Length: 375
Ligand SMILES: [Fe+2]
Image (tube, rainbow, N blue to C red; front, side):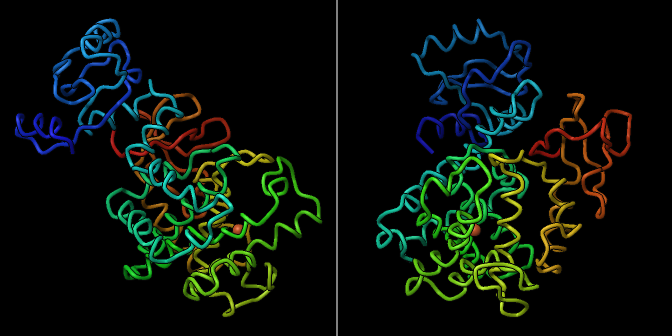
């Protein structure tokens, strides 16, 4: 924390964190529940209880140079972020900054740039990154992290973002299975590296904005083998086998080796669930993104086949628990709260919208799940 911010908090005798917020996210008529400060956090711009008018705010900000940011306490930040005035895109950007996802995403950049494997593929060099991922899992609520993961994304962000998401999802699953820190780290590492072999696939196949031909699909399906080869001699067998077998199925119908049952290791089984979840919630060129609740249903109905059912049940049980009591935006644009997610029909949760409590249907459904509990 810089000295100026510290000064403000010490002065006010509160141990509360300030967050930077672009001033454009405030709107006319917003009544401040807390003070807001200029971009350094040192100067009080408007006190608690004031009603925002853009023109007044602009004028006040004008005194402190051209910086377009203000600073607000974390609670205010989260309130503004989840308010209906804030667009899903703005919400996503703010959430990613809040969690530190953006920075994490940038710091894994070099790993997937098709070069310098000797520099990057080193377990000691990756250790600080793995610790940082693990610290996100410790410090943030899973749904807050999932709100970064779940957002539809453009194709060109595919590999880096997917790898980070699978690392986070693997870590979450490891914690839900009450594994030790070392196993959490192994699974995070496996998630981060499972698709590294895709960097060996020609760009025109990897990022084809259409369904692949049979020949192209055969090339694409070599990526787990390439992952294994790139990791050989550098990472332990659990990480390597998770990479090689994350597309295998317990019934032997997967690839690249067609192994089955016990031949598919524990880390590979967990990584397979994370991999599918992330692929389903993300936007891909040939299909639309889906809401997490719809994806839970697909897992429940075993639409993907060949997954470890025990691990899937643990995954779904924890996901349902975390999403219960969350705020949602309904298809009519109004806010509601998830009261109950039926285990066998997660796609149709019971929602409270003001005094109305009922199950969603084709005409009245969740459009967006907001990251925070409470209004
Ligand atoms: Fe893969």
